Image (cartoon, rainbow, N blue to C red):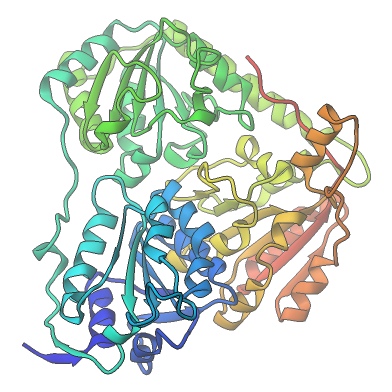
Length: 555
């Protein structure tokens, strides 16, 4: 068995898993790792300007590509800076393996310089957090990290390696193929009896509806979800934040749910008598966790790979533990045995099409909105004209960016990226950069407000250095919109900390070496976006917009 340096063994473990990029910053405790990447072309180290940006980029890469990736950071604050981004990877089920070069073991437990209990800090926001206690165990624990990150509910893993176990250390290691230490096929079928019960319910339904969740993306079940819907004329509604689970142009697609979604989708969900919750935990933003959206008499069939999610937020008529694609194919096969060509439901289909038409008309009417500066809805009506079908769109937190949930159309899986229930502002730019590295063949666009953009704007430098051609759209209303709306409505318009004084973002981009656009007229948005996409380098499009505080969606 070959003898190699400990840092080299870490890199070879990553190579065996097909890792293409490592995101992070250099540090004294990790130089024994990152220097192993010198003169290599199979793995690239992307050094960001802040560790938070590294975690966000890793999240975007993993979600866009469907492949695992890694962050490497140094001791103390170097690793602690990852927390916000890794909490997003945890909520968004992204397989990001964090390799933290910790202080030497002699410093741990003695309040040494940059010595913290990093494992305890990361335990609540990872699928696994562990400290290596012996150099020879590095390969074993690296394998365990990827096994945990990539099975069942995907998610981040934290591996803490004290410096003295890496620096100057060697070990015997011959990297095995991943199939030797973890399952590479996780398409687990559901219980046959439960599937039979679910089919019986669906066949009896007068107003059936599918809520397609993140599990549909992870398992590659988009085509199967659509086929299921077509077999019984079931309404299609994605779970909140997963609009890309099914083609939004499909005749059975109603719209996205949630406070930033479409009221028409909420109406369809409320009228449904049977709901197939496919690959979704029925999160808070989708259903409010009460009967304001789902009728108390609605019967729910829930499919999820995680047994803990079955019936966790809503009582179920049938619970099926299994992979979304495998179970969808089981259901479809059973339905087609009785209805080879499907069973039409013209009355319900007419209702679905009417609701979809109402939503389309509502959004199209926004093209007539005037105002100087322009209303933010007007931006989206112009974007709809020019955005390529396969565009990967990252939506930051915030009111103006949040309008995208109901106004950007998604036609292909792994094209919508957002804060995934984590809710942190500022992820838009860096996550967008990660998506472009994950799928360089697709256009990448990020949408953020002025507040969120400045959270991680230093990563403009990273994008320029590595030639990442993201189109970053900044909707500038010179305020923190959500908080200002709350102060307006509930605190007698006492505005504190919500009004912003910003630089010109297009000029900031130019200073960094990117392309900047400043667009004040709606009719110029399309040209700017098309020109930016053609640039094949980082572009920032600043659009001044009016303040707009939308009401919450209601039935």
